[in-house]
Length: 169
Image 1 (tube, helix red, strand yellow):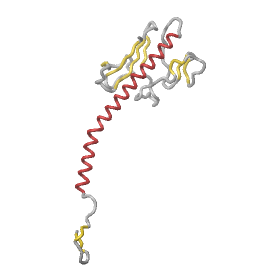
Image 2 (spheres, rainbow, N blue to C red; image 1 turned 135 degrees about the vertical axis):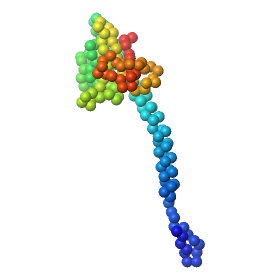
Image 3 (cartoon, rainbow, N blue to C red; image 1 turned 90 degrees about the vertical axis):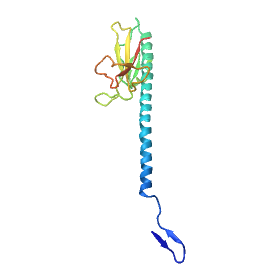
């Protein structure tokens, strides 16, 4: 719509963006989001897998410290619950006046148990107490250090079908 001011030029009252312009911008933003979001999700999966591998190395170090502190040398029959301190006096919230194996037992960044608490990693002691297997499920099936299959325990199944395994050195 055009309005003529008194004796002046013709002025346009149309201000702002048209509906078509807004729809084009929204479509472009949506297309860019669709391209970027899957890449972002893959990066997060890889980061969680990297955390799992680091956690297993931490637990492995704690197991080796435990073994060195035993006579005769042996590994424990189990690992303390996640987020607890693990020391020569046992496991609990605080480790005082003892040899600390792991200050804060790590847990899988994505797994929860039935009550919603963080779930630890799969641990299995060998029949002779001097071998063990630690296992974590990987999200990225293309991980070069991943192995096809599940951890030994059927209650610790890998939805991706890939796992990362650490054994005694």
